[in-house]
Length: 101
Image (cartoon, helix red, strand yellow):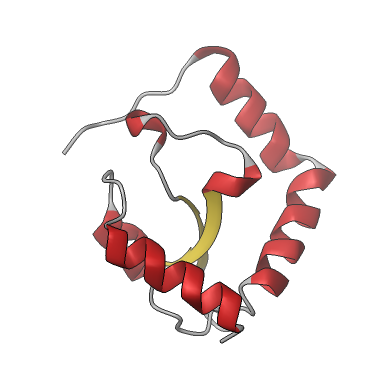
């Protein structure tokens, strides 16, 4: 597994965003968009620790833009790790969001 080291302005910008009001607003919108469910397995995140997950990891060319960030449960975040999601994972997640599960 690759160990990601993010340095410089990208990391500083990310930390600043996480501490700012835009992060809270994004998180509320993303929660509503995902109906409070994990992006990958559709389990309710209501009483769970929620992770902000990069769909495409930074080390694999992903960005910190909102379209690449989702909410996931801890087990899914850990299982996915530093790899790109498979086609089935991407399709399952997009169907989940579109259907409004």
